[in-house]
Amino acid sequence: GDLLSRLVPRSAERCGADAGSVILTRTTNDGVLEQDVSFWATGQEIKRFTLPWGRGLAGWVAEKGKTLRLDDASDDPRCEKTMGEVVGYDTRSVLAVPLRSHHGILGAIELLNKERGSASFTEADEKVLTLIAGQVARAVELARARETRDREERLATIGHLLFGGRPPHGAAA
Image (cartoon, rainbow, N blue to C red; front, side, top):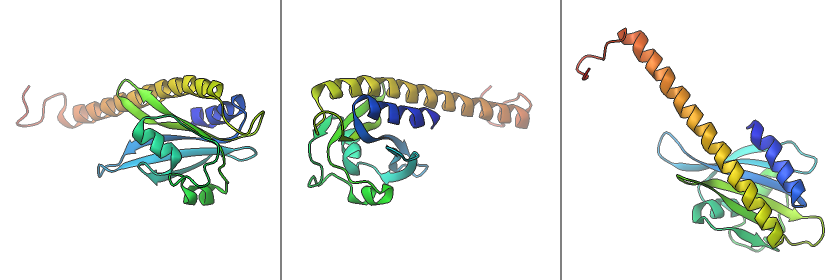
């Protein structure tokens, strides 16, 4: 959370974008894939919300594992119009890169509406965002591993308290 609130604006600034978002893929307790979205635009606070898996341009990038660079997203069928309404933002140009880890694709990072220089994102912007995406993916992977470890330690502590160090009845010692 805190990492994303710093990273999205810095990434957007670095590539001359007006806005950006990070989506992270998550599996619900029911086994349904969802996307947790953190969206930022110039002069706004980070907005967080959830979308169904694969929705929107960044969702497409996360699902397909492909980089996407568009000069005009307004007519692209992958562009999630309802997301623009939710965050109050009109998307024109887009650069989106998957967040890759050793375990697969964790989500995507996208920048919106190139403001400086040309109105289009460049190959240089793509290289910069790909490097940033690698750092984000590593940070997310470490945070998730830490959460898993902490959860396992809590469960082990609860088990120890419940069973006094003995395995539960019927479990192998």
